[in-house]
Amino acid sequence: MSKTTYRVDNWKQYNRSLINRGNLTLWFCEDTKVGWYAKPCKNRCSGRPPLYSDRCIEVALTLRSLFRFPLRATQGFLEGLVTLLKLDLKVPYYSQLSRRAAGLDVKFYSKKSGKKPTDLVVDSTGLKIYGEGEWKMRTHGKQKRRTWRKLHIAINPDGMESVAIELTEAKVHDDSVIPKLLQNQTITGKLYADGAYISKSCFDAIAATGGGASIALRSGTGTVKKNPSDGQTLRNSLVQEIRRAGGKVAWKKSSGYHKRSLVETQMFRFKTILGAGLSNRLFANQVIEAKIKTLILNKMSRAGMPHSYPIQ
Image (cartoon, rainbow, N blue to C red; front, side):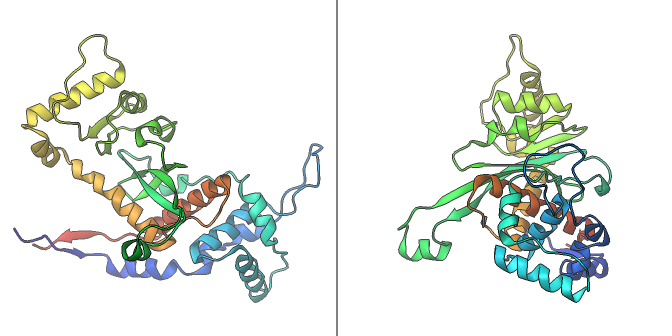
């Protein structure tokens, strides 16, 4: 069978959204100028109160991640931007950006994105901290230590926006993060995931959201008949669904399981647009960097995404 090809039917709008990704007014808006400085502390606070608001620091770090600047170049970029716009604003020093990053409360899922997600798709990927690149590894082999962080991500397949992320060390298994990843989430449809998420704790966390599960179980998985938990009841129904479909291969086609590949697309976008590594060295700052990069992708998705249809 020949591979199905697709054609984008909203190319004009999507092309405009790609251009707008580099438009500074999309990232440095009027609200940013108004909330540039921190509000006075009403109660007595120990130490000197901050001059710049969290919004200011977040915008600066967003521009840094978007354009892949070092901290010092970020300060210089902001100074030039403020001068060109003829704004009477001071710019935080690069050292302030580094110190304040760890304390930011980044809300990366915005209510402006529209309706709550019906389905969720989850997976994880690695982000490099130290070590040689892929070409060096393939040509000369591993010579120095390589350090990674694992990014666990849950996306809304309708709109390609991330609704939750967790950053952990590389040795943390995927299924141990699911309860925290799905905390405060409500699913009216299904959660799609691969075979790494088949543990009891995963299904219990999915059952707590009120949704169903579309997970590739291992061959020969049986049902729990004696006092099953809510998650085990959910897994029992999934086992029966696979059996009725005539096996896992047929079930994947009939159930729409391949929607799970959309999270692979999101991780590809993350690494292609924003880089496959993290620039910060402190773990707390790395968490904020991952959240800010996720927020950037969400904003790009809201600006416009391609709508395609098969032509053969």
